[in-house]
Image (cartoon, rainbow, N blue to C red; front, side, top):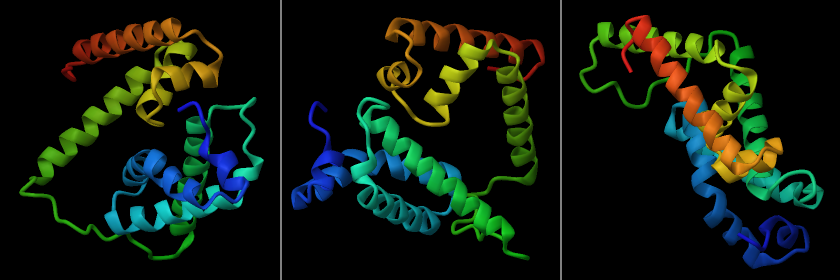
Length: 179
């Protein structure tokens, strides 16, 4: 990924648009699915994100962030905006497009409880460990992208993630949350 697609989009290169979708479509789609849940909402959001990228490609500064980090940041902002707008609509409830395949309500409660325990265990980590784990898990960044975003060496990023996840597993095991 030595050549950036955003400067090419800003310069008006028509081939750069399809290159951008090919390069970042999977990243933006996975973020949208995680944020929104519904495939149709995710499709709409992905379109919004790419439109935003095309409009603002000229604002990308490679000295401030790597291109994948910039794309992730734009995607997260658009997805957060979309969730906030949906929350402001009175009585709006997102519809599940696919009913859970035979998942009993008890299993859902157990999953939510385990997620809450994992979040609490994550909150107990040191700041740097928590930060890099969030970038890896919630933002889907690679070790290299996290290193670029945080200014930490790649080896340090890997160490923080490994040690942090070990601590989370230990805390979950202590609380009976399994791991």
